[in-house]
Each structure stands twice: as C-alpha cells, then as structure tokens.
Image (cartoon, rainbow, N blue to C red):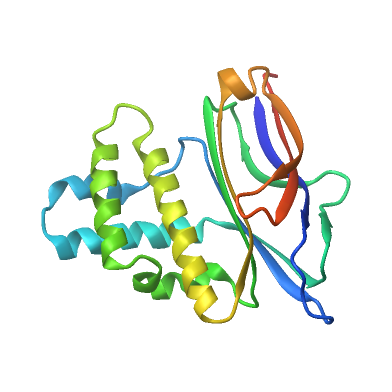
Length: 214
C-alpha cells in the first residue's frame, strides 16, 4: 500500500521587483500519525509558565517538520511547475482516513524553520494560552488528538510567521488550508484538482492525491 499528496503546480499574481524575488513554500501535512510527546504532559500541570514552555516546545517540533521548497528569481505572474511529476509533500504506507494540509508561501531569503529560536514572537503568551486550552481538550479526545493538536499548532505558527516576517519587510504570497476525509474526498484513494484558489486570493494551485491498495 502507498499514498501520496503531490503539489503539481502553483501560480502567483503578486508583482515583484524587476530583479525577481526568492520564494519559499512551507508545507505541513498531517494524517493522524504525528507524534507529540509533550501533548500528554499538558495534562500533568496547571502552572502557566510550564504550560507555555511545553506548548512552545511542541511548536518548535512542528516547525522543524515543515517541508521547504525554495525558488529564486520569481517575477510577477510566475507559474511554478514541479517538473512533469510534481513535488511529493507527503507519503505514507497506507491510505489515511483523513488528511490535513497547511502551506505558507512567502517572499523571504531565510529558512523559516530557523525561527524556532524566536518562538516567543511566533507564539506570544495570549496565543499560547489559547492553544494550551485547546490542546488539553484534544489530549482527552478519543480520535487523533496529536493530529488535531499538530494542525492547530501549524495554523498558529503560520499566523505568527506571517506577522514576524511582515515586520521585517517580507510578504506573504499564498496560504493553503485544506482538510480531506477519505469517504468524501478520495474514496478510491485518488483525487486531482486544478486551479484551486488559496486563502489569500493571490495563488492558484494544482494537486494530486494518489493511493494504492497493492
């Protein structure tokens, strides 16, 4: 058995300077198999400082798992073609019952994953306190608590990274947030979509979901 989520193509419409820009894609895919050892530990303390430290520690872990793609010299209206086969963003030995995908596309000349050293800026106290409450609820859930916590963390990190980078003169180019349920969206293990508009309205992308039972 095998399963893949593939980014086939993306097109952006934002205008860049005449020399072009450096664009980075950061993708995080969760199919309920994420391991977050700190999640159970959240249930063992009521100390606010300790809770914040544990949530931020998990934030660093999730940030480190983001897949990164870098493309240089990008100009207005650029279409990213990932060869004739696409770029595999996620692979598994089995077809998941559900899938969550978040992707951030930004103009920047650094690896966002290195921002783990500035986790307090990405996840300020107010955000962390809200996350801690949600994640403690997830920890008591009967189904995929780590998956729910991982996606919640990824979405919070996207907001934090966007805020921090905008303060440095960097720009968000595109944002993708998609959730799939096998029975509804890929009952036979396969799904293809073209010209899907992202949340920012500035990017359109094609993707393929492909799974086999052999």
